[in-house]
Length: 406
Image (cartoon, rainbow, N blue to C red; front, side, top):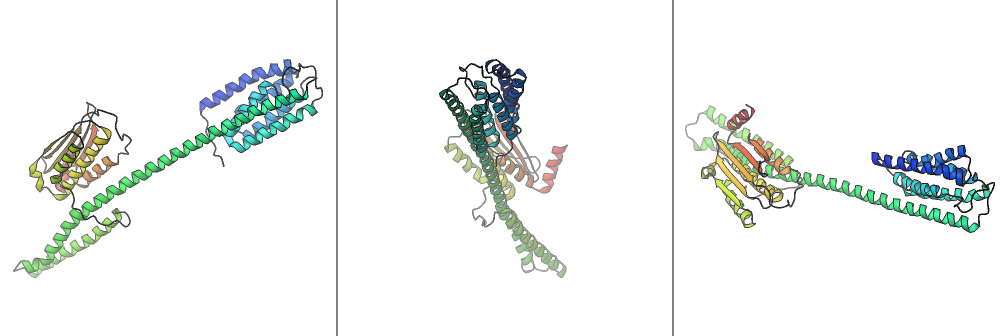
C-alpha cells in the first residue's frame, strides 16, 4: 500500500502553473480549431486541466473528471474542423494526459497509472464512433494520433515509475542509515557501561572485599578485643558482604547478557605515557605533562584519568587530523587531579566527522561518578579542549561542585 505524502509547496506551484497555462491554450484550441462551443470548451477544458492539481489530493476523482472532459471535447468537435489537426486527442490533451499519469503514479503508485492509461485509451477509441459529425479523417490519421498519444503516455508512466522507485530506495536507505546509527549508538553505550562495570568490579568491589576480610579476621589478628568491639567488626563484615552482593547485582545489570568480567587489570595514570607513545608512533605530535605524585592517587580516579585522556586523544585523531595535542595531568588545589587535553585546529579534512558524541557522554559519566566536573568546548584558534577536575573523595567532589555553582 502506498503511503500518503505531504507535497512540497514548489510542487503545488509548478502543477498549478502548468494547469493554468494548459487551460489558457486548450480553450481557444478547442473552440477555434475543433469548433467546440465556447461555453462547453471552457467547461470541459476546466475538467481536463483541473485534473492535474486535483491528482495530488484525489487521484481517482481527477482521473474521472479528465476522462469526462476528454470524451466531451472529442465528441463535440465540429464536423467542419480542419482535418490537419490531430483527432480524437488534441496536442494539449496529449500533454495533459502524460502529466496526469505521471502525477497519479507519483501520488498513488504504478497500478493506478496503468489503469489511467487503459481507461484513457478506451475513451479515445470510443470517441470516433460516438462523434456525430466526422470530417474526412482517414483511419491512418486517427491511428497515428492514438499511437503518438499513448506512446507518450506510456513513456510518462515508465519515467514516473522509475522516479518513484528511486525515491522509495532513497527513503529506505535513509531509514536503514537511521537504524544503523541507532544501533551504533546503542553499541557504544553498552561498551561504555561494560567498561564502567569492569571499573566497579576492579576498584569498588576489591576495596569492599578487603574491608570484609579485615573485619572478619580482626578478632583473630588483634588481641584484647572486647565483646562489643568483636560484635562491631562482625557487623562491619556483614555489611561489607551485603554491599558486595548488591554490587554483583549491579554489575549484572550493567554488563550485557552473557558477558564475563574482564580479567585484564585496569589502566591507570602510570599507563598514560605508554598511550601517548603509541599515538606518537602513529604520527600524532603529542606533548605530555604529568605530575609523578599522582601515581599514588585512588585507583578510581586513576582509571578515570586514563579513560578521559584516551577518549580525548581518540576524538582528536578522528575530528582534527594533523593537529598537535597537548596533555596535562596535575594535582588540583582541592585534593584531586586536573586533566587537560587540548588539540589545535585540524590540518586536513576529518576522517570521521560524523561522530555521535558518546565519547563525551562517557567522559561526563566518569567525571560525575567521582563528583567532578567536565568542560568540553572549542578554542578561539579552532581547536578543542577537554578539561576535567576529579576529586579524590566525596567531600572534595562536593566542594568542586559548590565552587562551580558559586
